[in-house]
Amino acid sequence: MTASPTLSQAVSCLDDYDPDALRVADARRVIERFVSPVEAVERVALRAALGRVLAADVISAIDVPAHDNSAMDGFAVRSSDLDAGKETSLRVIGAAFAGVPFEGPVGAGEAVRVMTGAVMPQSCDTVVVQEIARLEGDEVHVPAGQQRGQHRRLRGEDLRAGRAALDAGRIVTPADLGLLASLGVAELPVRRRLRVAFFSTGDELRSIGEALAAGEVYDSNRYTLYGMLSRLGVELIDMGVVPDRRDALQEAMRIAGDNADAIISSGGVSVGEADFTREVMQRLGDVAFWKIAMRPGRPMAFGRVGKACYFGLPGNPVAVMITFYFLVRDALLRMSGAGERRVAMLRARALGGIRKRPGRTEYQRAVLEFGDDGSMQVRTVGTQGSGVLRSMSQANCIVVLGHDQTTVRAGELVDCVAFDGLL
Ligand code: AMP
Ligand code: MG
Image (tube, rainbow, N blue to C red; front, top):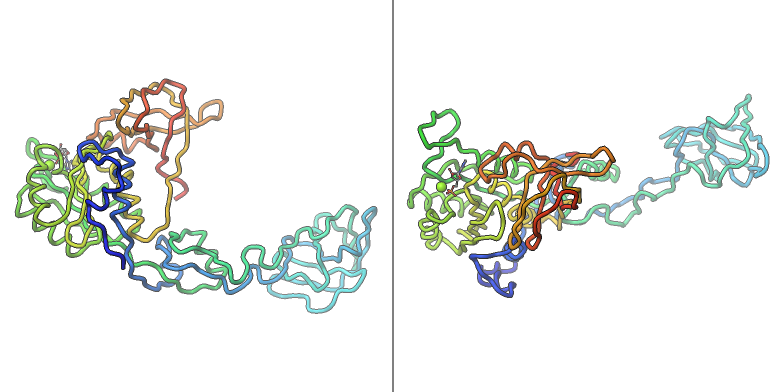
């Protein structure tokens, strides 16, 4: 195993490192350098591999399909028998079904009835679909104009034996499960699940079921984090709410650092609160306090506590989600052993103007939809305050306005990250 870098080694990749004015792209680079994948591998049954990270390439032991076969219901024929200019009559000498091949030879002037998936009978190279063939007794009449090789699937056209069907680092999808099943794979090696401990900090936080006194709020961050982490398929260690006390924070951090690969906390890293968090972190690990040039977001702590990677996110509920998606998510995927997974960005026309200050990356909650002219349009939703979760619920995408970008005028194209695809 390669030794993990210290934070100062990780930040040395930047030309100028200013923890109080860090670009999003630079923070992402440092984080990427700092984290490394879990090494342990376990073997799981095919279905259990859904959403897991492949630990090795899966090599196909067979050709898929294993034989040339018919892609349609119809008649398998020898193209050399067909008359290009007029109808050809052939004698039907048997039938082949999926799983029940026609065993005999097929001579000149002969054809075999075939169903979709049936192995192509010997010497036949072409399928005439039943809708255009005319059957009279045991004679089939084939119209002119058939293409040699039509409606035939070739052996190995999906996958050749010896080739990698899926690469290591792949997160197994529903399509992959089907592909692996088609290769007869019963079991496969995946990386062990990443263990992520998470907790909220703040004396004002109450748990669901408790009454709220003046100034108190329900702890929502642990629920959004639960949701986002669950989608990543990691193992969760929910550590609840940690009060704003040195000893409590230190104890939570110590336990998390002993048991998790990654720790995510929310709150307690903004100016005014950071001082005491900083003191605890200094005692326990190698942690930097950053002010990132982003909105929402900005304060964040990052480093190592015990054997775990630590992400100290801001307290504001929307800031938690944005920093998670744009700074933490890729790091957790990398730690899980996943290969690079770019989020799909698309460009859409802004329906209204969006104020933007250059010198920071801004993330706006928005709704993507098709306009009357069929083009993609995007409009921002609700209040963009970093505590307003409802607009995050209403949104179906985030508009990302780059570091140097200035105010967007209505009609200009902007980059968007959609929340959900088919999954
Ligand atoms: P902090 O960064 O700890 O100063 O928190 C910033 C703001 O986010 C404060 O208004 C907190 O009440 C709020 N906040 C912090 N943690 C949570 C949480 N887990 N759920 C809801 N709001 C929170
Ligand atoms: Mg707080």
